Image (cartoon, rainbow, N blue to C red; front, side, top):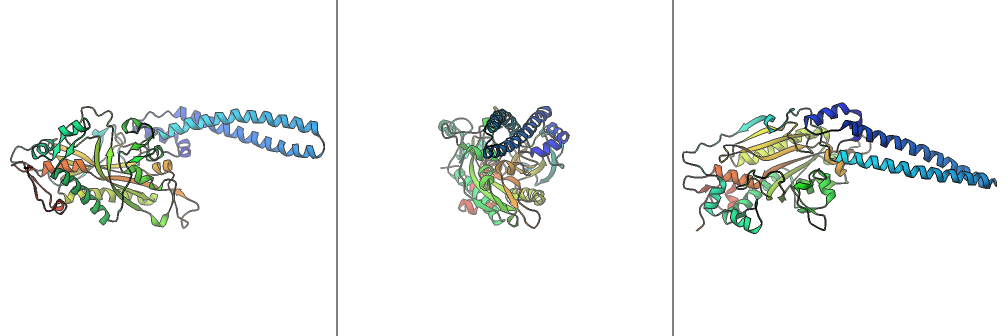
Length: 428
C-alpha cells in the first residue's frame, strides 16, 4: 500500500507512475476524498475543543450554583455531540473510500524500471547457456511424459478436472528430487527454511497484496473464509506481520517449499497441455526482509540465487527486466528468469524476483528499529522470488535432456536425489 501522505504531496508523480502501469488512477477522486477527510478532522477537533471547554465550564457553574446556565451549557454539549456524530460518520466514510482506493492501487515502479505498455517492451538483461540443437525430432514434455508413464494428464482430469496432472513412478521421484535440490541449495547459501500452511486467512492474503484486488484468482473455502495460497510468499512474508524487527538482524533470508493454487482466471486456452499452467503446482520460494538501503542489492543477489539453480541444472535461460506495464501489483522492480523450452521454441518464465519496497510492509505492518540511525521504527522492504517453479523446471529438464530413444537423462546434480538413477526409461 502506498503512503497516503506521499500520494498527497506527489500527485503528479503518482499520476505518471499509474499511467505507466496502465492503471486507471482517478486523481480528482483521491483529492476529493482526501480533502473531505481532512476537513472533517478539522471540524471534529474544533467541536471537541469546544465541547471540552464547555464541560469544564459546566463543572464551575454547578459549583457556583448557576444551575440554569449549566443546563444551557449541557444543551450546547448535546448539540455538539449530535454534530460530531454526523461529521465523524462523514470522516469515516471518506476514510473507508480512501482506504479501498489505496488497497487497490499498485506500487510505484522504481526509477530504474523501463517504461513500457506490456511484455513486448520488457528489456533483456543477459543470457546464460546455449539452446540445444537436436539431431532428431524432439518432443514436448507432455508427450515424453506420457510415453514414459511419468506424467498422466488423463488421470489428473479424471480425479480433479482440467489443469491438473498426476505424476507417477520416476516422475513423482523427479518432482521430489527437484524440490529437495532447490531447498538444499538455498539453505546452504544462508536461507532459513520454513514449513508453512497452505490455507491462510484474509488478513494474510491482504498483507501481500492478493486481496482485495485479485480475489477471482484465488481458491477459497466456502464457510471458514480460508484461502489456498498462490505462492509461499504469502505466509512467509506475513510471518512478521505486526512485528518490529531489530535492524541488526536484517537482511533476513527465508525459503520454503509449498503447494500453490491458482484459479488462472482469464487464461482460458493458454498453456493447456503439460506442466506449464496448472491449478495446483509446487514451488520453492525465497523471501527477504531488508533495510531500504540494502534492498536492491538483495534483489540482485536473489536473482543470482535463482539463476544458480538453472546453472547447476545446465538449463539455458535469460533474465529480463519487466517494464512498468507488465509488473505485478506489489512490485517496485522485477526480474523474470525465462528458461528455454524446445516445445515452444522460446524462453518461458520460470521465476520472478521482485523488490516490493515498503508496499507490503505497510499493508502487513512490518517494521524495523535501528536506534543508531533513527528514533522509533520504520517500515522495512520486502522481496520475493521463485527459486524455482518446480513443474516448469521439470518440463525444462524433460525437454532439454531428452534422448533420441525417448528416454530422459537426469541432470548430474539430481542423480543423488534420484537414488542414483541416471536415466528415466519407460515403466515396465
